Figure 1: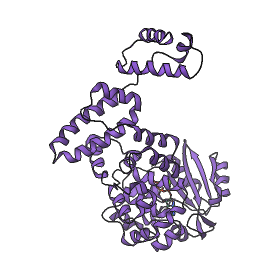
Figure 2 (figure 1 turned 60 degrees about the horizontal axis):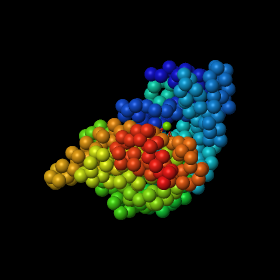
Figure 3 (figure 1 turned 180 degrees about the horizontal axis):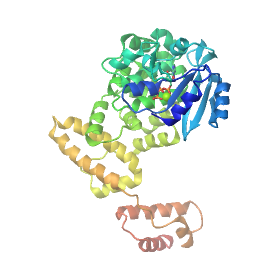
Figure 4 (figure 1 turned 180 degrees about the vertical axis):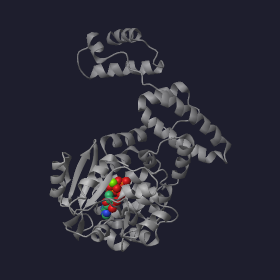
Length: 408
Ligand code: ATP
Ligand code: MG
């Protein structure tokens, strides 16, 4: 067990106070999975939590004071401590909460039964929502009436599929699935940040294939990612199979790329709509611009592509092409040959180190050209020649070429 958690449980369970671990930490430890962040629920008010922490010399950060959350930091690890709450008003996007709730009320405002379990200071599981049996059967189910719980916060539609992707088995709960399908048009009222954060977590599951299938079937996928309309999720099973066979780590963005058209303008629009980070938007753009490799491509021409389009984008395209060739290889001899070639190209791409053009703008100025657009033009010509030489032209070769270019 965790020493930091022991300390906190001692501190926050004395003098009539009661504090329990809740949410993901309980769920994952019951399922025998790695535990990430630890969330605690407490009968103490936020200022009492901060007060006890201060008296014990523990750092307290008010991370969500209006919702009753104080983060306590022990040994560099943060523990979110939240006062028992009940919802007084919800509008599908935000909830107004009140303190002084009972454990049952605190449990009832949580989303899913597998997320509504507590573990007390004595180590006993407290189940007020029927979560234990759902953990056992890996059933993802809303606490209370699905339709009503979704109307309180439409993000729960995406959470339902996200938790199904990670923890569910078999078919999703029928009532939950129906309620999600009915609520799909309301998803556009959610903020882009909340949507993308959930979608990204869903797409990071070991195998999000079944969750995506049900999302598509219920119309939810098209609602949040209309770009998936055309191909849908056809490429996903092949990608997952390739990941598992070749040891690729789950990659949310690559899975997204497998479902959308490879088109720069549409992917820019998607990035803006869902407010992707700059790095994520750049990765999608690189993917859109990188060419699909012909299996007849020579190593030399391929290196040129890697240099021009960047290795990350080329690798994304290659992985998807390889996954699809592998999926067809069982019935198609040509696809088998193609997948062997693509595999070799992937290895080449992964080992590629981008060479640096051994000549700079300042060299062009020193050669006597006045500053202006011509400098870039000449540099571009030199770079073209250098690429064509398979990056073999030396600095001296390039300076000689520069001389000729400037003097003609
Ligand atoms: P993980 O952190 O592993 O993704 P988690 O279950 O801890 O999973 P969090 O998003 O950290 O998920 O939320 C902590 C707990 O708060 C959840 O287990 C759930 O009980 C509750 N919760 C979070 N978001 C919602 C929501 N939108 N509606 C209702 N309850 C929620
Ligand atoms: Mg959590």
